Length: 137
Ligand SMILES: [Zn+2]
Image (cartoon, rainbow, N blue to C red; front, side, top):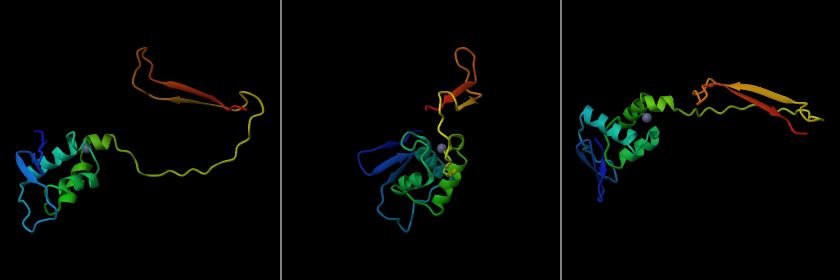
């Protein structure tokens, strides 16, 4: 099912019309587990969400509805999303110490070579890429 944003401050998702709210009402919509899951799916996986992260998904859904434990449910849902797990970008920063190297005195004095792969097979059937770098004088 695909959610359609109307011209008003309401959005129709999973057969439920959600109205934009400016603050969390005391009596939040009582959504069933299936309805909440459909909303998470709509906001996270459909073009309006496109696998955005926990905070962005939370902020978007919060504009329309809220339920107790919503952020944790969003987090659990996203952590179990296959697409996100396969395309996860690590936030861990790697710090390598800089090293002073000797400047080559002649061409090809200092070269590096590496083999990258296996990659997706190209039209010739190759799956490895050979790289060769020569430091310029
Ligand atoms: Zn995802």
